Length: 72
Image (cartoon, rainbow, N blue to C red):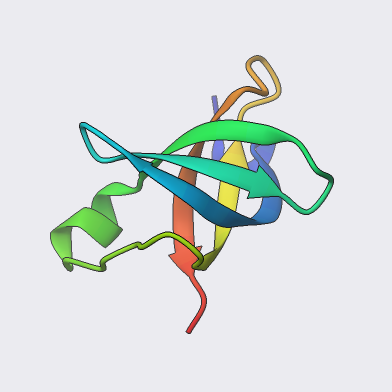
């Protein structure tokens, strides 16, 4: 799977879950389960409830995603 195949959405983190997982409500009202990307983990970028984030998802499973950017 290449990076071009990913679908990007914006959303808001609603809940922090164990194991560095987050419940994210997308702008289109869907709720998904997401984890932070490796670069965000490496640079210790914290994501809290209420943060606006960019999420990329694979077209094969639209219930899970990866948080790639946190807006300030």
